[in-house]
Image (cartoon, rainbow, N blue to C red; front, top):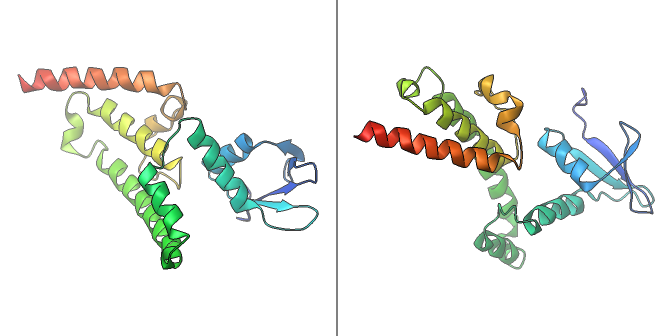
Length: 186
């Protein structure tokens, strides 16, 4: 990550290729998406005109994820967003969305902190697996937005942050957790 806090500058050439100015190589939308998941801010500039294309490309990344079945935005939310462009609500929507994601980041940190070993519930059988699943869920829901100051070292392992291949593991862990909870209820 850049030490000066400036966004990663990506230049778009006339050929529509995207050029990472830090590493002096060409990048794809998937690369840019990964930079963002890793906590980087990016700025995409058209080399010829100097226009800032960041919003356009970020929307394209979201559309690509949604079209691949990685649905984060429910249809009713998408409808509301479209409506907001045609009403007076456009001035309120950006601030609302920014505040909502800030609350999500804060809540994520608090939930993870409350699920640590200092909580008496943490000693319950299967709680560690549930906590790891909750951390993975929160990370998936936010795409890794913001730091996780309350995350344990165990949750920072590559197994907890893998993408795509986790679903079967999570289902198996959830089934095991349900079996353990059923035993406790007897």
